[in-house]
Length: 319
Image (tube, rainbow, N blue to C red; front, side):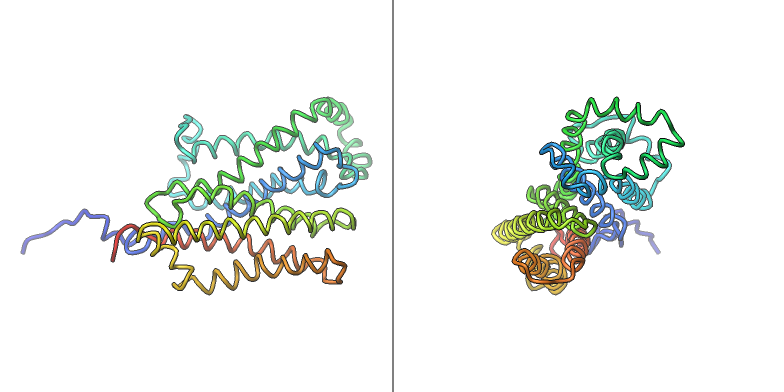
């Protein structure tokens, strides 16, 4: 009997008929990356507008979570890596045409500049901790903080740029996979950025106790939700009016097996319901404060799970 060796990727059970390389780690990484991007961008905008005293949570408290959340996201990404000990090789080169190379370097730059921003805002956000705990144990910390305060504006602008870059990167990371029709769209970059900003605004509403700050960021989040709905509509229209292969891809959420997940969890629970709740709250109706932002955060996470799964299920190969 003759032995036949088949080298075709079409018989790779991890690729065909459905790509099953990315599990839960990638959606979690994309969500936390987008959330951190939104936190950094919104806190920077508040500081640049000179509203850090009125918006303490947005400007000074929430930013403390950014490096922690990003580290959890990067840990999830690290767990997904096949060759974990080779991760350092990403930082031995810079490839300007590679979104992953850009993202790797942006994430490294984020940590020191975000730390500088946190140090500058620490006294405003946590005065008791700063004066009664930190200065007693590190007396020189005040001098370090005062030195950085002199560079508040450039550090804040750098944080704003890095936040926007990280938010867009999380979408571009998928959007450049031309082999997967559902991902291959320039809309994913701005969609993921706006989704991250919406999640960050929701987190501020969740943590804040100041009525003025809560009402402002409810309005901000409502605006982001409207824009996010617009981007999702544009994505659907782009795929539905494209070639046959993109029509098959969008069918996954427009009549296919991911339709219920998309319309009930992503659109319903994650966008439409919280938008309606925020409209009621803005108009003075009493609704549990944590309800709407919790839905927004859950919806943001589920959007990433949907996008990753739908992209892996879409293909150029007709079966």
